[in-house]
Length: 528
Ligand code: HEM
Image 1 (cartoon, rainbow, N blue to C red):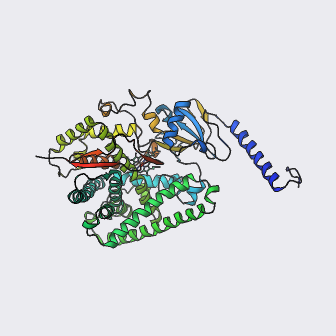
Image 2 (image 1 turned 90 degrees about the vertical axis):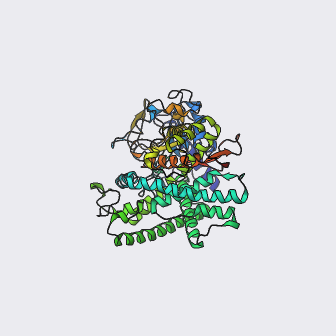
Image 3 (image 1 turned 90 degrees about the horizontal axis):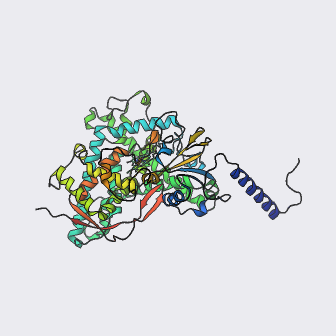
């Protein structure tokens, strides 16, 4: 056999030779890449990771200011194209089934190892499966019964939280400092568990019991532990998705990292086993039920009753004639939890932050709540009531324009595509910098000014908070209803004062912005 290697090389020389060849090949590919865009110069193996702060949104802001609205960076070995203006999003957010952007992530060994490329929605690259899950989920969470349960359930959960606050005030004084983000996260976690499986979780009470152990709420230890373990396990699952999505195989096989990856996989298997028990129990309950009015309106019940005479959310259609397997149900339930907990909790936290900094806007919010609900602070509201809150909705839009919890989204091209005059090949990873477009002077007057009124002039301004096209967030209505509900319950009764008004919002970036901590005083309003 003819060797291209020089003969008589020792190990070090062979390594150096191999490395130099790799570097030359890397830069040959780099300089001859199709459709080059401006962007920072990458290094072999790590791409631009050495320049990356860990915060996609902060990096994108800097790169947009240097390179304009279209640039490229290498996330490790993966070339990513960044777009930061609404007109550049048009093809990515196309609602056509022929769109070149129906797949989210380029083929990724991590996601395959974690088994998420054929399950759920977000990373599902099997378009038939994805479409089946997506249509089902969208119908189920838009059904009137489900929406009713969202509004009722959120109020029940808030009442529990208020009882805890009341006890804290009575026993420790009114001047308590709350990590308001933590409370919102516990509330949205409980809410999503209720909406997916109709199970009660006790994470709010568990947290409260730890803050005030002398006045504990009496909940059976077993129930507390079960809900704690369930939530912890789902949160580990979310971390695992991020880990497998972002960690290259070469790192995943390193000693220590491998063991960590295996623990994450074990957690996934245990979570699936736990959910499968819940599914079996619910199936038995449904079998014993003759009238669908006695069934709960959660997603699990929708999944199990589809195409039966008990179909609670009328999801039956020609796409959904086959029953969902238990494996698919588990994937979808976990996904709703993963996508719908932190995103909503962070959105509420950011609204709290902006309302604390803009007292006039807060006054308008309170005024609108009084106009719509009168001055009864305990009025149980419906989704119809929420639809009257035009100003509150404008506040949600303005906060998510200026400081979105999901500042970016991403898609992969499955066909060659032209964007902004550039002809890109298939199989490229595109990032859509939603926040960049949301603060773009070409789209907005005074983009850096916080002004909810800009959404009240009747023009339907595009903010892409929930992405766009066929992969647009299916939980958008649910999120708005939940956020509005929390705004009503917080601001009709309480004033929320931040402890440190000069501190910026502290967050970590893991696919979305996740607030680290936000300290506040919760001051009950006085009613005559
Ligand atoms: C304020 C809260 C939320 C925000 C800001 C948000 C934002 C987003 C964004 C930007 C995307 C990407 C869309 C795209 O690529 O075009 C997305 C996808 C998704 N979201 Fe949400 N979301 C929120 C709440 C929820 C909730 C409550 C659910 C629960 C049902 C949910 C479920 C999903 C799913 C399953 C996807 C993937 C869809 C697919 O790939 O087909 N999200 N979300």
